[in-house]
Length: 399
Image (cartoon, rainbow, N blue to C red; front, side):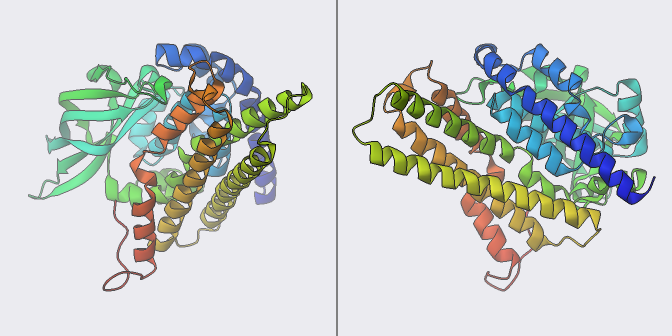
């Protein structure tokens, strides 16, 4: 098949899967109260994601996936958030791990996907536990937190500070069977309630070498999977170059949803003959929020397209490009958050009622925006350092 024909096939597959995701938005909105009440994404929603092919987007074709790009994945996440922030967040975390697994050694991919090519995973990215070398593998111990989607995972992706076998330390990533771990139901929070982001305890669990990869290799895009799937550009993507746009689309989607809700309520009032006394202020706040949200959407779309083009053309990706993406994702989320807060003010005190649709949007937004990867001050400093605006010149981008 010619490269141009491959592009057409990919475009058709991307359009189809995005349309199926969009069709799920009203279903997710209807289930949103149950998702909050039960503090987990319903099994029916996970089944819908499977049927729609959403969990195939980043999975390599060799193992039954669609092998699409990060822009398709992020666009789906943004759409799902129009219906339910928790469901979109879980989708984003779980689906990203299909790509992550594709960067692991071939033996690990075969073990997971030959056993069950629909298996889902959750992740703990902070290296809060530790690993000690044990023969051809490692022994893991410790506690990890914020494992979104844990209710539906049969595998767990853990990050640990490990013995490197030479007297030093290194950060490594692992895939571990969920049944070998102890989950702790401590996810009692005010927003993104349905993500099931529990903690996990690990007690002397052995992980074979083929299910481990050096963190630095995943960060650099040089992990073993880049050789297993040489035709798949995502497998050579430096991790942080694209993950700036993994869960951040949830917040953009929530902002889109907030604008839809607010404009719908205002139009309903006007159609009933009720014109707010401060109508001009209402108009100004809606317009300003719409501009912020449109800018956030534009940042997401243009940044992702640049990522896709850069990876497809196998262009070099430096620390400055990584820092720019992280900066723009942080700013995109900042715009989304301030727009939602402004739109809530148009509802007066009514949004404070638990039954008001804007309350769940605001709570999800506030919790999602606390993610350390999108701290504006940290990302601004990192970006400035990457372009030489620092004492002593350019500095390497940190973890």
